[in-house]
Length: 405
Image (tube, rainbow, N blue to C red; front, side, top):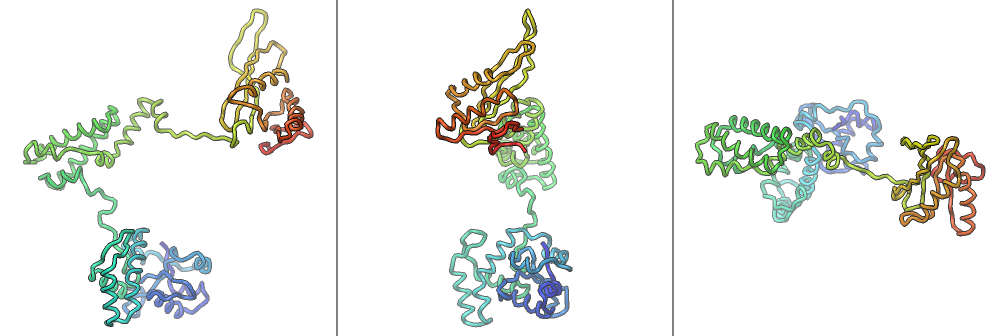
C-alpha cells in the first residue's frame, strides 16, 4: 500500500502545503475536496501539532480520476504507515472499515454531547446493520467505541486488527480431540507432526486410499496418545482419536496421492489429473475442411517391385473428425487428381461429413482442379464456397480467411 504526504500531494496538485493539510484534515471528517473523497489515514509521531500526528493519503484507494491527476509522485512513503497498522492491510480490513464508517456517519455529523447525538446512538443500536455482509445488532458500547476511535485516529482507527493466529491451524487433529485430550501443548504438537508424517508416508509410498489412511492413523493416534502420557480410558481415547476428512485436507494427503499415481501408474495419472483442451477453428461442422497428403512409415512389399503407401487425409476443423484414404503407389507414381477426387467423394457421402463450405489445402498440384470445381459449385448451388491455399500459386483463387501470410 502506498501513501502520500501532504507535501507531495500539494506539489502534484499545485496547491500550498497548508491547503493540503487542511484538505486532509477535512477529509478525515468526511468532507470532500473538489468533489473527491480523499481516503486519508492518521500517522502518529510524524510531525508536531495537535496530537503529534499528520494525515496521509492512501493512494491505492483513490479513484482513477484522482490517480490520473496525481501523476508520478516524488516522495511517497510507506514504511511508517505499515508500522502504524502492524503490517499489510488486507482487503477485508478495508471493507470492514467502510462498514463501520457508514454505520457511525450519522453520529459524526451531529454535535458532541447533544440530545440529537444520543438519539442517533440509540437508533443505530436498535437497527440491524450489515457488517462484513451479515446483518447484526451492535451494542451501544461498540458504536461509541468506534466513534471514539474515529475522533482520536480518524478513519485509520476503524481498521480492525487481524487475528494473531491468522494463517495458522487452530485445530490440531479434531475439535473433540483438542478439547478432551489430557496432554500438554508441546506433546500435542509432537503428536500432530508424527501422525501427519505417517499419513503422508502411507499415501505416497503404499498408495493407500484416504479412507483407509484415516482408519490406520486413528489407531496410531490412539496408541501414541497413550504412550505420550494420556490417562484417559481406552474406549474414551479411541473415540477422541477418530480422524476426519478435514484433517486429511489439512495434511494435504490428496497431493501425496497424486504423487504416488505419477510414479506408479502414469496412465491413470494422465487420465485423472492432466487437463485436456479441444481446439477448433470453425463453429459449424464441415464449414472448414483441411486436406493434406502424408507419407506412411509402413513397408509394403510386392514380388515385382517395392510399393509405397500414401495417406490422403481430410480433417473437419469443427468436429475434428478425420477421414484417411490409403493409396498404394508403384515406383515413379504419385498422388493425382483422380485419387483426391475419389477420397473426397467418401467424405461428402459419409454420414459424418458432407460438402464443405471452405477448403484449406497446400499448394500441391493434385488439388488444382478443386479451385475450378468450387467455382462451378457456387454457380450451381447459388451459395458461397471457397478454397484457401497455404501458398496460393494459382491466380484468381480465393485465399479466404484462413490463409497463411
